[in-house]
Length: 83
Image (cartoon, rainbow, N blue to C red):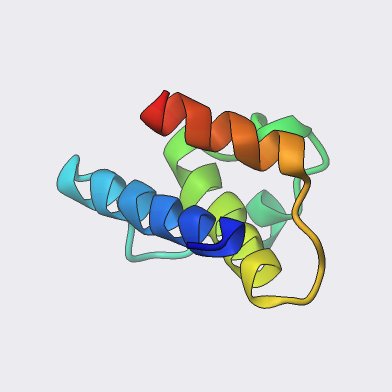
């Protein structure tokens, strides 16, 4: 399994977990909220909103692109999950 495949699987698991916990939202936050310049949009989004509306989509796009993944970042994710 490639690194990108592993990451995509983890993103699906994250989405399922948010859904299972009742944290997955149907309504998209406002454009202003999504345009926050603060790290993790802490001034406009709840952590689960940031995961759903910013992190998961951006990481999914990265996985489907030709851009390389940062090995250290991916390794930490996998080690935290399986280590």
